Image (spheres, rainbow, N blue to C red):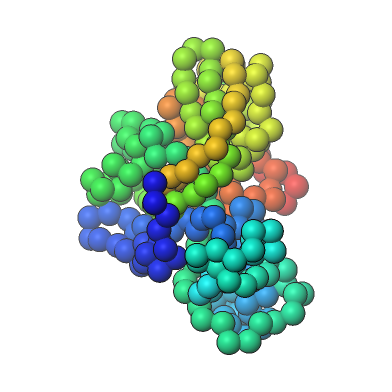
Length: 278
């Protein structure tokens, strides 16, 4: 698949319609920051160097987004010049300032491959199809959900997240025949209720199904993926209401890869959510 230019990709960040939630961009290749720590570092650096206001920095950090600039990228030190990147842009608050930068917009991190089906209104859709159809809610756990009874409801969608990428994707194959493809940092819920990153999973691990069933992983493989990835950002900022249903498995929304990336999360045995290490 052909790569999109940054100007084309960043145009996605301002797309919205009356029939659907807004579409945000997931930046890719050169200036793809894959962790919340890096994106926060970029925003803090941008504020310190006078490119964004304190209010803008705080908003971006709260939403898990980060500032990007024309012709610059974080990976320049490793890759050298490319068609879209000719110099280095840091993701460290204390890095030296660079004068004369041109701001392009903001990006987020995520996601699923394009074919993965997430539950919207109790029906499984590829996220791209849900966006195109104007779907406004996504199936997620309710506030009274527990490990024993993971009840679900519908949450309003703040944004759909999409972007082109070239990166490793983890293919999760379960004993009962389910198949899910997610990026390395994607959060999955174990049968214990603990949320972990996909890159830590291995055959024999047991995931939690949307009906509370235990689902054993038969195989975990990694392949290089080039194409579009998607994710969903619910409007709610309650952690439990950001646990979604993908192919019948419980998984975290894009917020768990951004503003909550450093939190330890576990679905409680009681009728409440338990978040440790905040």
